[in-house]
Each structure stands twice: as C-alpha cells, then as structure tokens.
Length: 236
Image (cartoon, rainbow, N blue to C red; front, side):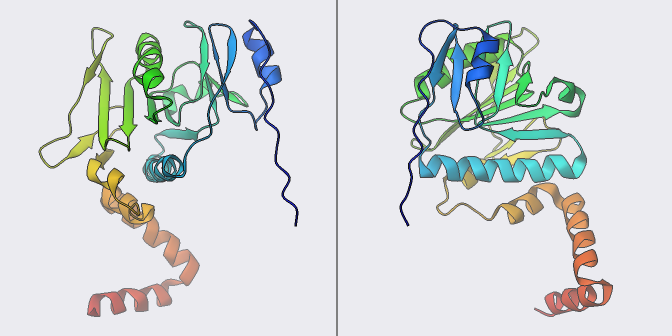
C-alpha cells in the first residue's frame, strides 16, 4: 500500500489577526500565534510523545476521578489575549471553576497548570517567552520537564504575581497546589520504559482510585467473579 504524506500547510505571510489565525489553523495544524504572526511548531520526538502521553494519562485519571476539572493535550490552543498570543502547550489542566473558558477548539484565557516537555529546539522559548507570558497571565503552576537533562522544574505563582521555583520533597516527590492532592514522583519521568500509567495512577490516587477501579471491575466481571479474583490475589 502506498503511503501518502500529508503536506504541511504554509503559514500566512506577515501579520494576521487572532480571528484570521483561527480560520487558517485547523485541527491538523500545529502552530502558535505570536506577536501577530503564525509560527509553525516542530514535530515532537518519540520520547517527547511517550512522556507527554504518560503525564496526560496519570493526571487525567486523577482529575476525572475527583471531578477537579479537565485535561487537554496538544494540539489545543490557549489564547492569551493580554499578551497577545496563542500557545500550544503540551498539556494543560483547567480547574472546574474555569471550564467556562473552554471553546470548541481553544481555551480563552490561561489554564491553571501548564506542562511543557522541552526539547533542544524549544527549550529557549519554554524558559523565556512562554515563562514570561504564563507568569503575566497568572497560570498558577508551570512545569518544565527536560528529558534530555533529566531535570524537572516546577514554578508556582506567588502573592507577588511572580513565579517561584518549588522543589520536590526529600523523597523526590512534587506536590501540586493547583491540582489538589496530586503528587508526582519525579524519578518516574526518567524510567525507560515509562511505568504503567494505570498502576502509577493507582499509587497516586490511593483508596479513591482503587474504589473506582473495583466498582468498574464489579460491573465488568460481576460480583462473584470479582470475589474469586480477589481471593486468588489474596492467596498469592
């Protein structure tokens, strides 16, 4: 079977408005709108995709189990009208209080948490322009994950409206404030292959996640089969 390659759509030349950017950028176009210009985003590496997918899975499972809000993965635009710019973060969390900002194909205003998995081609922008923008529009937490250097940085917005670095605890665990109750063991991010997302979500979520999982298994297997399964596990 012949493989047909999709041709990348060239960005409009010169300055365009936010509305013109939305008209041009469809769901297959990964681009940002910065200082009035459409900027194409480079394709992600396999490691980048793997790590972003892992983070999306464990955060989503935690957030949805507690009805804390919603998770969106790139490409999903975040419009920051006060900057003005449109960014495509790797992963964003929008709290339940701010879900009214979600439009059909973009977020109108800042997310509560932005996670960027950096690469050699994006690290300067992630640490520079985006850092300043996210801080200025009050993104509550900004996570910078650098798999090449095995460094994870976490920034929280302080009362002075400035980002302050927040270190993991003595056990290497970062505790989020913007996602209440969520924590992340940083060493998970560097494992190859990455840990199984469902097992990690179970460890993070504890009894709440376990109870939801057992309820699902009860519906799928039936109470008798679930009881037999638990008995087998208890004997091993």
